[in-house]
Image (cartoon, rainbow, N blue to C red; front, top):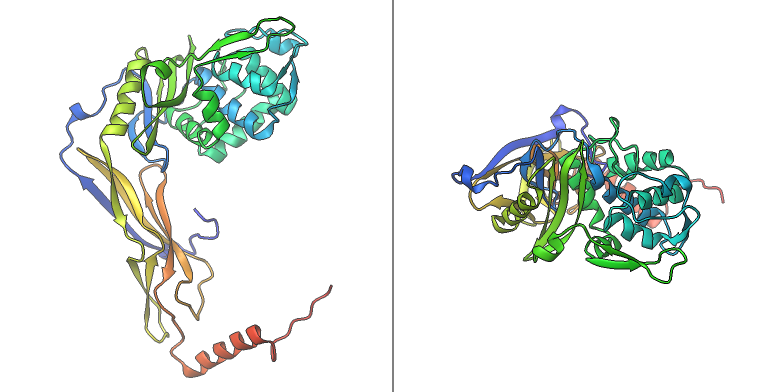
Length: 389
């Protein structure tokens, strides 16, 4: 939401209504999952399409590496050579067998992070970008909050278990949604196999993506696997069909592959777009005393659509916020505020509200005074302002 738009007081929350788009919801239509927590979101809007304990804090395992990768893509230079430290080379867990002192391009390391889930590669990336794991963790937490992941805390780039390293299904979906905006990330996460250099050897490191949905699910666009004993089996995956893309996350799920397929199919097959506001539609009539018309209609600047299930319901709130600095005179088309549709979790659609017509004081003297002020400002003459150059 535009930060220039805010409450002046409780009375400026002009209108709140609950809209229910409904038809009888059969429990059988919803995916039945083994996951401890799960979520399905629409990539374009961020709208939550399925929720099972999505705000439950959990160990994210290697799903952490989605955040590590997008930070490196934004902060680093893919052509730069990374020198592998001893700490990176001797990381426990999954590995691409980096050697201490080895030099390797950042781009190649990121394939090692996302395809082979190399913990050594993740640490090498973090140290290269921020100087240390600890400094990189600070970047991770700052970036996560910018993405809308507000219930997470990260202390390492790989996802190795730590009591202070946690996230939620919803937060991880928000991170994946953000990462998918980056075309290089899409290229990496959607790559099935890749060969990257291996120190001074004549042969390279052959990497195969752990995300087997790339071979098994036609509409898949990317994802990341994760597993530790503490986290259980975890998976984030994205898929696109007929112009729509969704992200599914399951955490601590013994049947993760099947459950994610169920979620992706549910999101891509069982929702349709519904037009809730037309461009130019009067949204609210604002009473305004001491004006020539006594009221002002506010129009939607853009059309808005929401996703609704073919069988089921969604509940959304409609809210209007006014700008802080509304003054007369008002010109037709002036921005007056914003219209938002919210689910229980966030804004899922919004548009500017604009004035339907001109509005002036009802006093002829005041109207003349404002006309004169505007004219002198636009044409020079009576209005002047001292400036220093």
